[in-house]
Image (cartoon, rainbow, N blue to C red):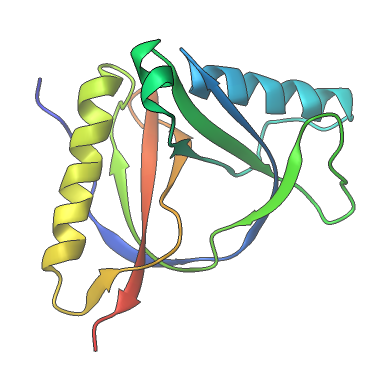
Amino acid sequence: MTHSFGPITVEELPPQRVVCYRTISSEPEEDSIRFVHNWLAAHGLSSEGRRNFGFDVPVSRAELDLGRRGYEYGSAVPDDVKPDDGVQERVYGGGMYAVMRVVNAFEAPFESIPTGWNHLNQWVDAHPDWKPGCSLCYEELMPGESGGNDLVLYHPLEPRQ
């Protein structure tokens, strides 16, 4: 399969106050997204038009052997929204990031997404002005320009000394 990536840009990701849910399962992305979307709906909030971020969560060797993976998904919310019923409040982002779009990421997600992260990591490692930052890497689901869904990858950066 040929993977298609957008250009890599350097952008400031402002802090995003989110409600989030972390799960470990055989389909953690779907499970955590569904949980947060159901929570938003139960609190009279739409999941449409919000910034939504996620990231992989490490799991034990025993969980891997059972086919389980971990994922945390967060949806940006206004300051007056308070977490309850299983969601937590966190701040995602805040700082400089190398940003790249994986086009139609879910056509073959276990190929295109890791390949995208590898491509972005190599760019960061080789860049003369930037080095890897110490905060989390994020993924943001976006509608694709030609149908399907794209995944925007955010890799934290710090200036090289």
